[in-house]
Image 1: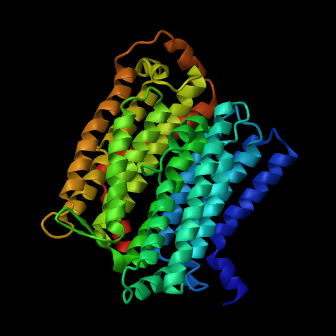
Image 2: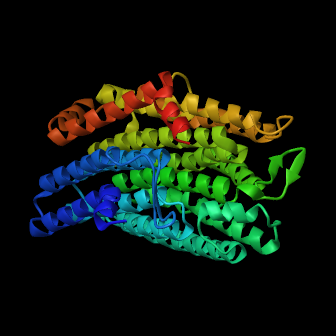
Image 3: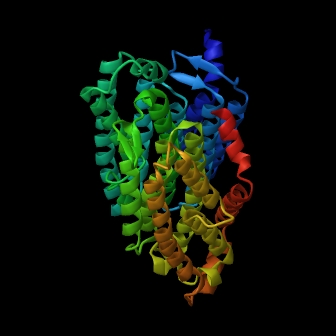
Length: 489
């Protein structure tokens, strides 16, 4: 393969890297040129999406180190879109200094997500995890004016480095048992190998490492402090982009690499493998996430614990296995990511105007800003899984696939637990809406005047409106995304 062909196939990643370096140089040359940095970052992400659309349908580089396929290309575009919305949120974060450096870190984290999604080789997956992780640690601790940001970054770093160690040890065990790091080759090798103790340890350690990344219980303890203490754009990107990429890679690892040692999580026929491990993680996440979320008075901590529960829901598709299960997982995690980045956008504007992100900061939001209240209600009701929003169809598809998996409805216990968790979650999501729509606040005029006086606020409101419309459209016409996912598998 010629270098020219290599550059063409890696052009989206190159565009994002060059954009990151350009933004960094502009920011260092002139700290007041944030508008230029913002424009260059957004333009670079748009150009990267255009470059993705011009790639060939299928190609493989360096024995699976980088794989171009319809599925990988689709989710690279989704990661770029999530980064684009994060950049739009960062544009309104005036309290952050060194805006050029901050935008450059977002772009470098996006490159890590693209490498993560686009690889089918364990070593490159690990490199993508580390590039993304190191960028996100810095993003979480970036606000030097807030001591909670430093605490969030430190906790995220400690838990993330532990997760990386688990993942690397698991990969080393799997390599020792299979003699290869390519996912397809591992799957072929494991068809002729019984589940030996060392192999099972490797599989479990790899899954534990990814459980940290997706904030699945009991490996979720970093998430509440990271979501609450990090700058809002950082928390939004951690909760959306990294989750999408992690679930894409986790699905490839368990369904392609570990496929022959699937096992069974059916209540009447438990068989050792990775499926019972993921089922246990899903059950714990649903229970812990929903019950602890009930006690939260801070909206960002509430969203963090609900993210733990949603990680449990999303794992149902992987436990069910097969093409339909993976398709349901990918659809749900994508819908959830766009919904959550919108919810964090509303939190950012409320925090900007009131100075707080507790429930009382949302008091009377309907009278202060009907647009923000309407957007937040769409995001909250979608997370709760109510029709006709995208979250409802995502949960319906997930639960129906899990219910049909195996013989005699073996995953009925897990689906019943997920339905019970969804019922609990309805309460704390409605608490947020109750505060927004029924409680009264006396500072409506001040809020409205401050909000409408800035072009940055106007851009934020347009962004939130676009995200709310996306969530509504994906609920009414889920085939827009679901068909593309199904065809690409």
